[in-house]
Length: 171
Picture 1 (cartoon, rainbow, N blue to C red):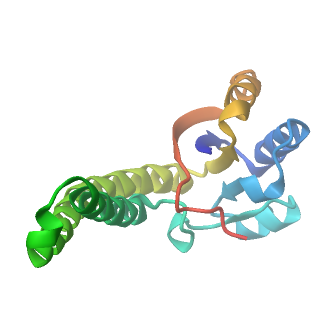
Picture 2 (picture 1 turned 135 degrees about the horizontal axis):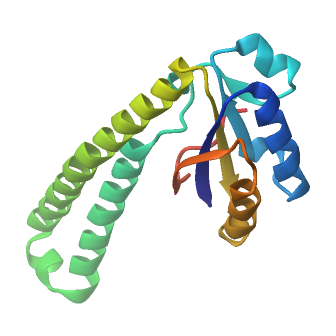
Picture 3 (picture 1 turned 180 degrees about the vertical axis):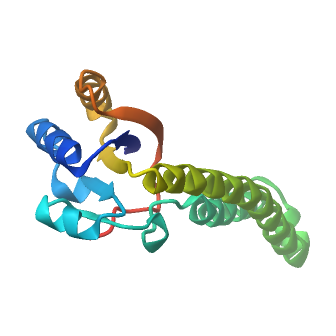
């Protein structure tokens, strides 16, 4: 799935956008709003929060751990099935896999942390200016349809897109 981020001026606009994307088949579990106006979120019957920090929407660090584990497992699997190293040097093969996993985790975690921090600053900047952030998770096959619909919406401003791997929209 792909995660799309948009901003708009008001919760009224967010509610209109919500109605439009619901007509395209996006349900409430894939549509989320961030706004400093907590009571407004409830009165507009939107699914959302006042702070991005209260959610797990930004998760580049989680993806780093997943990638590191997968790297260590792939390295160990490769050594076990395609070389004789594991028969002769089992402890060294395990150590190499673990070290490889940690190196990948460190590099990706640094990149992920800086992405998460940058994006959190961007979102908070918009929220502090009174904007409403709209987050929509879409299947790859729906992406073009949703993007086209929102390009035609005068109040929807595209911010970014990302993966939603390991970062579900909160209930």
